[in-house]
Image (cartoon, rainbow, N blue to C red; front, side, top):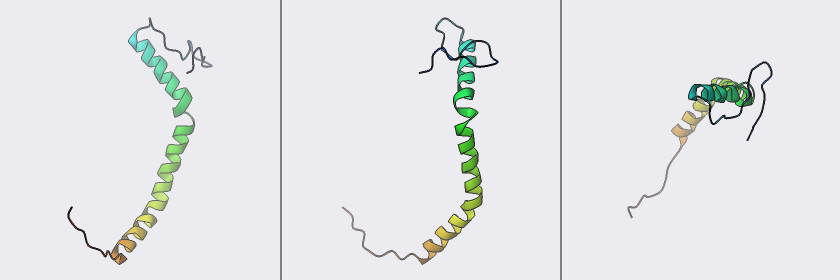
Length: 80
């Protein structure tokens, strides 16, 4: 847990303050989220995933459709 973490260029820190107003703690939480995840790894990973799906998705779907047409299912399903 990060306590007492200061953000360069911002007043205050990223710690929860028990006596503070709800709006102040929500603002602190939003700053914490921006600093720890949104502005770094998560955003880059989301963009990379979206690009990969856009580029590779049609080829993967075409392959799966072709395999589904050729697939032969054999066997008997029995009720319990």
